[in-house]
Each structure stands twice: as structure tokens, then as C-alpha cells.
Length: 452
Ligand code: AMP
Image: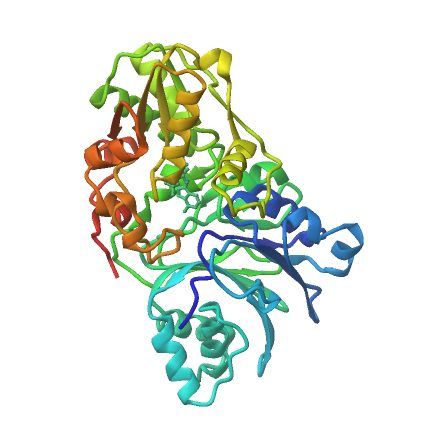
């Protein structure tokens, strides 16, 4: 069974810059929120690829000396998130291989839905796999393609995979960026300040390295980067309505990014405003669950006129904690991450805003925490619709039986989390907030309407 190891990841590619690996490193810093399990960079000096990848945070993996070994004017990078999966470093990216045309490295964000089928076919023909990653399929498809040139092998290979993919390929002389036909996961193109190009999962990486946003890579488009040339474009898949992942706006992307052409922060604020219009409630203060709920809570407060307060503090320095066994210790673990501002909350009717409820455990703990801090009423408002269905295109959501909204009504969830009231944003209002046109978003996690 293949593991879903490419969920919630980030990719970056730098081409035509003498400090390519350093820029890839800074970009991965900006993209760290998309995955904290492992990270890696491959660079090319024109003759050879160099790769470093490891488990852990970007800043722990690389230092000046390591970046020096990643020489050359092109580099690709990846941060990986995975809940389940192999601890093996083999499952970190870039995936690197030597083959008949030389050397290549690949980074991938998304999830291939026909990965098992393709893998079984390759194994039947004698391929030997080293990892559990669906991305490894691509290496084999490219290596065994009968086409002569790498670009044609890439086109050949992406036509044999299905699902969600934003990919960056690096060869010794070229870089390629490709987005699946539906454009599920974001991928943007920018120009570096001293020449050269960048592609990245989110534009917050551009801001850090001083790059100028050019445009999004189009769904189904392959971009080819070659020395001394402007990037060239091949539309591999044509005439498909895009299906952008709406959850990027809800939770995943950083608020300072522009995703699918619009500001994540502004979009989240609009979701909060919509929520205030359709689900008003009398209260004294509006507070966010940090950090995800912040923009929507600002929007809710502005629309309702109810003052915004910081009612919960988040400690940003909590990594994994291993104290689990007793209930008391579990509560302590939550408080280590989120603690109530008692002076703000005591005696108040509180509206608490979060971006989503998945299993329901976070909301239950938060309501309990606010009540213990003296809130007279706690009204939970969620800036997205109930999460009723798992994602097969790259967002890490649990199986349906663990999704609370797949198994309980809103009133039952409200009783379970022990809130005074609970309300969600509805699908129509969410689509309005993201300026949806002609069904161009994938909303499967809220509707169960899957595309592939
Ligand atoms: P839960 O306790 O499962 O209901 O978790 C809900 C919380 O997890 C919310 O505060 C969300 O901001 C956050 N969240 C939503 N989706 C994800 C995800 N794919 N990975 C990690 N956290 C998430």
C-alpha cells in the first residue's frame, strides 16, 4: 500500500542565479508552514546534481557549509509533511536518480490517485522501488519512456499519472515546472531581482527573496527553463476547467501569499464577514483560535461591530511533545500550545472563530479552556463548511469515520464540544468569498464531489 507522503508539501525551483541553493533555502523557510517533517534541496552545477535532504526543520538541516556544497545556478527544494509514513530519509524529497540521459531530481506537491496501479505496472515490468512515495513512479516513467528527449519523456510521463501534482524537475542543464490539468495545488512563477526565475508553491517565498510575481503556472502547463532563454511553455493538457483546492484559502496557505491570483488574507477576512452576516450572535468580544482563525475573526468583528480581542495566546515554540499518557498530561499539552488570556475572557460572552473543525478535538478543548477561564458564554463560529469528506488530492485529512461532521449533525457537534452555539460558513458563502467562477474550485472536503 502506498503511503500518502506528498500531502501538504511545498516545492520551489530557482533557475539562472549564482546563489540558487541559498535562494531555495530561503524560499523553503517561507514555505515551512506547508510541511515540517523533512526538507531537501538538489542543485545543478551543469555537470552534476548535488542533493541534501533530511528529516526536520529547514533551519536545522542546512547551514552555510552545506549550502556551499549545493553549488550551481539552479536548485529545487521541498518541505514534506506526513502524518503516517516511513521515517526513512528515502521518503524525503527531492527524489534523485541517474538514468540513461544523465541525472535528474524531482519535487512534488500533491497526491497521485492512480499511483498504486502505475507502480504495480512498473514492478510487473521489473522496476525496483526504493521508497513508498508516489513521486518515485515519475522517475521510472521518465527513465523507461521511449521518447528521446527529456521534455518529451516528461510529457509522456505526466499523461500516465492522475491526481494532484505541482512538480519541479531538475536536470543538469534545465529545469521544468508542471501543474496537473485541474491546477489542484498552487504554483507560481516569478522573476528574481538579479536575473533568473523562481517557481514556488506560494508567493510568500517570492517576497522573501525579492522576486517579482509574474503569473501562476497554468493548470496543465509545462514550463521549460533553459540558460540564456526566456521560459518556454507547452500546454500539455488543454480545455479543462480548473479545480483549485479551496482548502488552500481556508487553512493551508500563508495569509501573506497570493494564491490562484488573490490575497489569502483578504479572502479569509471576507469569509469572516460572510460568517458574521449569515450567523450573527450577541456577544461582547470576538476572538480567533490562533493562528488559523485570525483573519476570519478580524472580518467577523469588522462586519458585526463586536470588538476583536486576542483571547488565546499561542506558543510558537512547541514542537512535538511526547507527554501523552494521562488525561491531565494531555490537557497540559494543549495549554502548552494555546493558553487563555483570563483577564480578557472572564465574565464575557465570547465568539471564538476557527478556520475549520476536522476531528473536533481542538474545538472541544478550546471551549473547555475558555469556560474555565471564566467566559459566561462561548459561541463557536467556523469560517468554512463542515468537513465531511477526506481529501485524495494532497491535503492531510483523516478517514471519514474520524471526521466529526461526517458522523454528527451541527447540533450534535455543538453538544459534543459543549459550546453555547455552533455555526459554520455555508458552501455558497464560501464560494462567494473566494470569487468562484464556473465551478473552478475543488470543494470535495465539504461536499464529497470528487473530480478524479
Ligand atoms: P480538529 O481537532 O481535528 O478538529 O482540528 C481542527 C484544527 O486543526 C483547526 O484549528 C484547524 O486550523 C487545524 N487544521 C485543519 N486542517 C488541518 C490539516 N490538514 N492539518 C493540520 N491541522 C489542520
